[in-house]
Amino acid sequence: MSIKTVREALNEAFAEEMERDCKVFVMGCDNGVKGNPFGVTLGLAERFGLDRVIDTPISEPAFMGMGVGAAITGMRPIVEIMFCDWVTLAMDQIVNMAAKMRYMFGGKVEMPLVIRVPIGAGGGQAAQHSQSLESWFNHVPGLKVVAPYSPADCKGLLKAAIRDNNPVIFLENKRTYAVKGEVPDDDYLVEIGKAAVAREGSDITLITYSGMVRTCLQAAEKLKEEGISCEVIDLRTLLPLDYDTVLASVKKTGRVVVVHEASKRGGMGSDIVAEINERAFDYLDAPPLRVGALNIPIPYNATLESAVLPDVRDVLDAVHKSMSND
Image 1 (cartoon, rainbow, N blue to C red):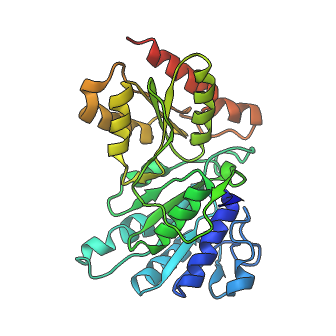
Image 2 (cartoon, rainbow, N blue to C red):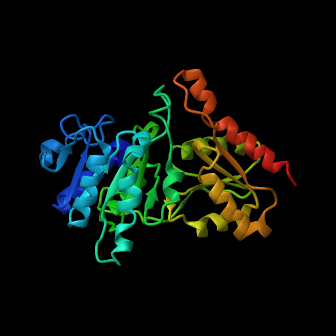
């Protein structure tokens, strides 16, 4: 094991997969010479050349279309949308082409395409650079959606996504790039579609993913002081979602709160709560609750931004509400 940041773990995953398979290449705005605005691809251009770490024009529809074309002709492209907000510009290529082609051609073509999308707010980047749009992709058949938190999971899931023959939306929370953790030194993959129990508990289940894993773990530590034992489920993958792990935890605790940074309305929490109600209603001791951002654009002002985003206090309030509902 080595201690690495999420940024370093992702960079290592790129390098290992590009070394292993010459068909793997990276493209996006400022990925090459500058090494990505967040430093994730730093040094790859010097190591593999600018024909495999490609700086694209500022046209998301164009280079996403290039990625789709490269994937169906046998390459394994990794396409980065610099900010989640700009994925809207490439939705036709992602939703109507990448997600559908393998099905519409009867499996005769494969789509080994990874689409890296930094998500989340923080730092006063305002309404057009701060969104978390993962629930949009959860609605699209043909896609896989991954949202890891820890450095080890980021590396293992990125490597798994690169080797997958289906299009994978790979979500990275911008505020987690500096998060540190143990990362195995050997070549390893993390299974797509498998959640992890980040913390064992018995009284209530917190279901979360990406940057909110840290928030839920902090809340669970505070609740421990009150005698409340929280189980924290890190989904890691949103589509397909590991309901076996989720439902096993819900059946054990009888109470559940789903936490995500995205807006509460129409977020992943709505779908997860619906599934729990349909598949584990008789095990519930209280109605499932959701915690998410307010349903307004993310403000630029730091104080207002903080007020919009969910935090530890919001998780504590939801848990207290659930525990008081007998």
